[in-house]
Length: 193
Image (cartoon, rainbow, N blue to C red; front, side, top):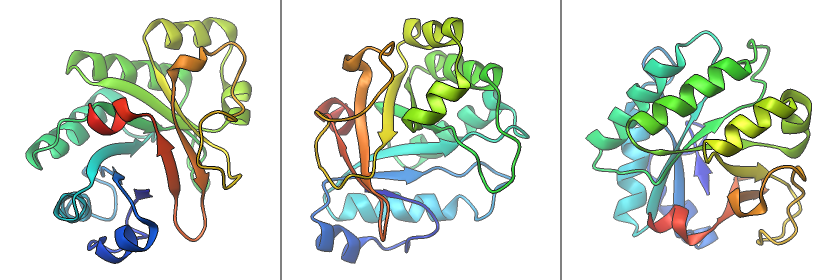
């Protein structure tokens, strides 16, 4: 499952109810509300319940991508987490300006500088609408992996609709349910490093 401030800091009941093995926690950057303490508490709760932990950040056009990536990776490391992938959530947020491709590219390059594998969380239609041919190839060349939303209730990666130009081997996750809780399926390399 993936969580944010919409879920409790103690994830015990959700983990038990949905038989969760891997929790992807939203890593807040300073300047966002709520504070990073939410992320810290959810990471600790996931670990206490025997889950592996991943992390994602929102892409905000108003925030510097290089600084933002550094801040969330620092937060994860301060919680004792090494992230196999930093997922960059690239979509529209309640009227906020949408980060452009340059923002995403700078964030991806900063992930490589750490080094942490960069990933994009989005949906098929968003990628089709927001990436040109050259941009697509740049992200593929940089080894960016995908976690796509496809709310079909199927806990499998086999049926994910994805852009034909993106290598299927770079698809590592699928969000298959969004209500009442975000449920996902991931390849083992995301869960185990």
